[in-house]
Image (tube, rainbow, N blue to C red; front, side):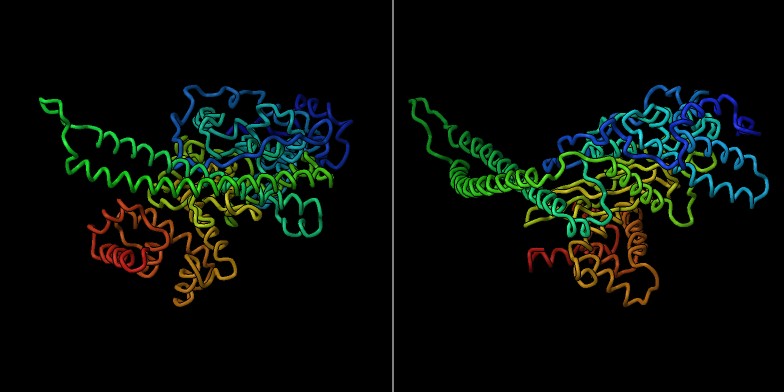
Length: 542
């Protein structure tokens, strides 16, 4: 590592660069979020919608760019990150120099703690000018890439090949992309205390009603699309059956044959299909009426919001709060004993791009988990099951595992996405993503059971086993570790879980049918679980 650039006092060129802002930033260095945009607000765009028809991930066509972005080796990169940030940039540069040059462990530890706080203050300052981000500032927020000489050439090349734009169509976002979506209103903010806000603010109450009604509206729209798809499939089947009964054998005298056995069966099938279509048409008509009524309710609520003066734009405070919320997410994925330095240093992450939590890699990891746990993203509301992928926020951190921030929005349980954070620089990417999936599984089941989470469903059964075994510790943490074994070991036929836990998971987090069929042939234990499935299906339609 080249530390010479930091030796002694602040580099005169950088000092001169920073002094350009002295007149404007002569305060305490804390960011002024009212300067986010010229008028302090950003107009809302259309909110993100969930496509309930998608049944699987759109897998990425490429995992890296062909060429390395030269910006990550530019001698001007570091100056560009600090440029225009006034006092926060001066403090970061000074503390970074002292931290890198310190030889005494106590001094090193002291400068490290101060530097961490200074880096976050610099990030806040950059976010406060979010509408005019330069590429270096954008990549600093996205990856924590601060100084090229702090990472190796191989690492710079790997980061430089990460695909910048979201071409996947999936809800996977880097930090800067996430802030942009929240600022524009396409994604609602990750509020920490929504309930308190709703109770104390009439405008927030109306907005909560709008959010709930939107969720119900989207749910019924998805229901209509599903019924329409069923009708289309039945109509195609009807056409095939009609073609079968229309095909007659013709004799030499020009007479056609009577219906044969297959055609008579097709006639019977046609009557069944017609009955099915008639019933579905009634359901579809009813669904349309319900949908129209809810749309009218939504319009009335939006009119009421306009009359009450509920703002149609987001003020800069929203972005400040979201930045602080994501900062908490980064702390959680890093963990108490993890490395909380919020910028990249070569000794803390791997050089191979396939080991990094890039958008493309994380999509592939979640797709691999879903291939085993097919119900991971499925949510049932009013007896209709939809696949709803949560927002996946890719955060700049060295965390060992991902976390679920919330399973779904409080005011829209029907179609809202949850929020999951995954570190870009994990110790083991596969384990980090599986841990995020486990946390999502746990929190969705817990919210579904609500006050009875210790008694009912997945969490209830697991909690009862946990207490019966008199295990000490956090039951959620134990569940996550067991889920990791479920996906990595048990799915391959390697028995690592407690017998009772295996039974709970087999019933409540079932493998795909093909995998269960394969496992039953791998040993007595899985065969017995499979037989119980068959018995339940015969007795109660499980």
